[in-house]
Structures are given as C-alpha cells and as structure tokens.
Length: 166
Image (cartoon, rainbow, N blue to C red; front, top):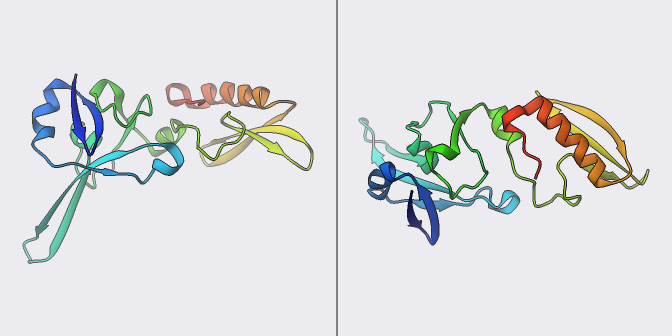
C-alpha cells in the first residue's frame, strides 16, 4: 500500500498504481461531502478536439485505478464507503442500485439508524426500505433500535453483500 497526498488528504492506493497515479494532477471534488462526508479525487484534462472546439475530460481516481473511461457506464463502489481508500481490494464494479444500497447514513438522519423514521403525529417509529424503486413498509416499532433492526434484516435479504446499516 502507498499513501499519496492530494490537497491535504492522505489517499491509500496499491503500490502497483502509485507511479501512474502520481504522474497526474488530482484535485478534490466535495459534491457528496455535506451529506455523506465523502471526498472524491478527480483529474481534469482540457484540450481542443479535431474541430478546434474546447473540451474538458474528467475522471475520478477510483475509476482511473479500475481502468474505466469516461462514458463507459461502469459504476465503481468503495466497499467500506471510505473514499480515501482507493486500493483495488476496496473497489468493486456494481450497478447504480447496488451502489445506492451501500451508501453511508446521511448526516441528516436523526434516529441513528437507516430506515428508521419517527412519526410525530402517531408518536411511533416505523421502518421502510426501497427495493427496485418501490418502498416496502416494514412495520411500526416502539424504538428506533427496533425499526433499525427491521431495516437491517430486510437490507440483508434484499441487498446481500451491498447492504449497509450505518
């Protein structure tokens, strides 16, 4: 493992990728930092195409390491949700749905559990999970822990290896 510094962040990469990653200039993209605390690292190349038109090509570090190119439609997932860990053992190809299943708990979450929501009017906790674009109601519960556990069991059933609970 090699640690490189990108804009003050210590980023982990495999030794075999260190040379080609270090040869490029990377910057931080903080588009998901507010909600999920994630930073992504990007390289931008500005050039003129054959018609003399200005173009900008951007690639994320994790996609570069996995050999992806812009527009190929491939999605790369950080298994541990740590965008600073860009070792190949922590990266995997996935679908958009699988990637969304593996998201961290949002900073807006007030229960501390994924899938647990408090209904103020009824003064009860309930739990839901989204599966293939549909919301599945998991039940009503007396505590956020119970609602979170219901989500955990449903996530394991529906999302398998991509299930994330925190």
